[in-house]
Length: 360
Image (tube, rainbow, N blue to C red; front, side):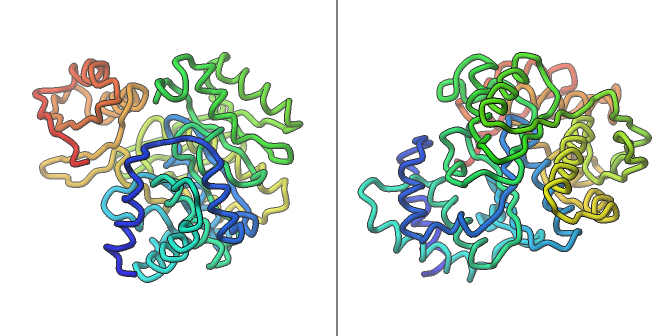
């Protein structure tokens, strides 16, 4: 199988869209020999901050000496970015090999798998083949019926900041959204929750109680920003002092608090994560497209915010790092997003808008 043939197989199912449900991915995994049962996971759901949280966790676990898989979506430039081990993208050869294995297994299915289900299966097959110690597994859409939820109880179920998104699929209230995200919680796992609205927290805590799971919630009052510039920031969180965080953004030290709570949960489960690994991971983590400085002169910043919550956080970053400066905003938005509200949020910072259509 060539690289183009692998992509053709994955994209051939895009007509099904995000057809949520676990029946097809369960069948496909069974045909593959259930690779997910050979792996351990940190499962991460939420609206904003999933990718950054996953990147930090992966960097810390890698620094701790574990062979760490990282599954995220979407990609920025190449499909390979979705599957990483110890920070390195899957090679074209390994990508083609895993995709061919999934393609052969899927030929026995009565109901064809969706594009994201095929992507999920490729990741699981690859991580199992490579013998990963642990996989940081980002939910695609929702949680309860997302194909990543084919796994058994993870080491930790992590819930990031929640907001209204994909309301036509997940529900139009924060409680409904929270219920879908909390669907990744299973008996036997620990739960780590980003501190947020009482309504969202109550739903997650109720689901955890039903499953007999403990819940760790971040403490915003313990988050302290020491210094920051366009190259990173220094923060305190609880007993951890002067942590150097490479990622920019006012929201990133709240995401970092979630990561640190998750680290403590994993340590309590028996994972050996030295404090130096925590510091090294945060100091070296790379996650493109999140208030990323592409060029200094002239200043060009890339940010993947794609819903009102994310754009509001982007606005906070602009106020903090570029006060009083008017920007030229190049913007392209998918049709299912609340583009009007996003534009309203960005308008005070814009000298002009340039509208682009995403090539998708």
